[in-house]
Length: 355
Ligand SMILES: [Zn+2]
Ligand SMILES: [Zn+2]
Image (cartoon, rainbow, N blue to C red; front, side):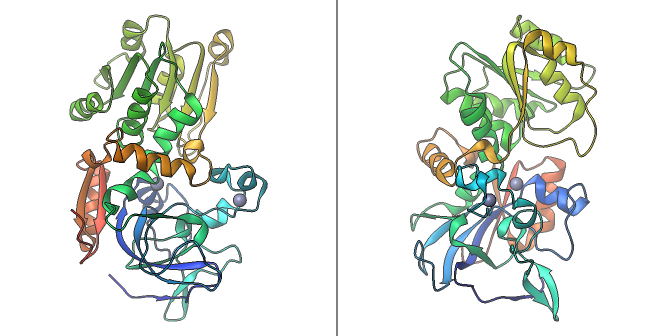
């Protein structure tokens, strides 16, 4: 761990002592260069903790409040005003750029700027400077190491299912890729009452977990398995809703071609620039829709509050995925996530006392 200088909170900002922060594949993509970011930058975007100090204009939270941090948004562009904060027109700066809107970085090291606003938070650090608009206040005894894990991948998967795909009870739903996104999507499909819920993944252990989250059928992919044929055995006229969480071109094509009439395909991450050679005739004759979904298509912070309630009610058992690591073991946690040993690593700081 190294030490940087963090700015004092501006009028609309909140200084947070981070207690628990989840690791997401987006952090790994930023480290590997698949997601371009400008270095030096502090990563981390599923933070939670306790408010330490607030700026003069902050009224929603006070020092001592426990909060969960969401990705930042500007609050004033057309997308934000209409409730589509995940599509904020300024997210290139506020989310991926790692700076404030005015380009300032929030932190420095030996006088050199360090970007400390990744997703508006840069929460792989003891302290983060966030804004009042991207925090949610939670209870004093809230299990932050579970709640922080809801803010990104689970939000994306459950949101794509509940806000966009909205399967009916007589629908067949297929979820491709059983990580945090896929498992949350399965739980959400179960909440919608979908009759047939199919999980597709390479790993047997993931498929076992998928059943716990609501999958009624599982398909193990890889080893020459014809996934489309397997899905037709389960849903002979095609599935009605398909969600991809892998960003892998051939998996996405399997998902799209497994759809039946008026089927809808959603995806939550791109292919890293790999083009999809799609047979548009197959899309046309069945009236299929293809839809990208950012941030679960939720409205502001409202949907995350719903997810917290689903977790509290046991309908979204995120704790089944979370494994805690001391913050100093961040490199081990990143490696375990990249290798698939751990689905959702959460880093906790000394003294966080989260059980
Ligand atoms: Zn993420
Ligand atoms: Zn905006």
